[in-house]
Length: 160
Ligand code: MG
Image (cartoon, rainbow, N blue to C red; front, side):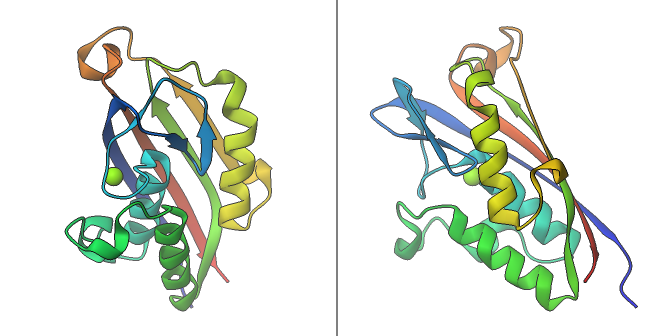
């Protein structure tokens, strides 16, 4: 009998002009986007690490190295799908997930319902099982200066 498992994930990416801003699989209109080898979706990277952590697996950087050309420009949903495959193989399923995004810009409130729906769809759970909060960093540090966006993710896995 497999017990419930919990996992935490964190990620941060720098913002720059000329890149698309993708958060939780949703492209958000913005004059800046996140820098990264893949699509740099900081929300899905934090989620991937939370899922992998809950089953005691390697982290996202080890499984999908940013030195591997096959992940250049990759949709980060690919990483989530692989983590979910491993969760399922471990006899587990997602119970719920909760996210906290730190972003000074853009204002995320209008996009929260779409991001939450996208995350629920990716995870195969009801939208009521996904929490998504966005907060600013009160002008403090690189996030507060609008130079980066960070995300914390927590997932609970339950026996299938
Ligand atoms: Mg990342």
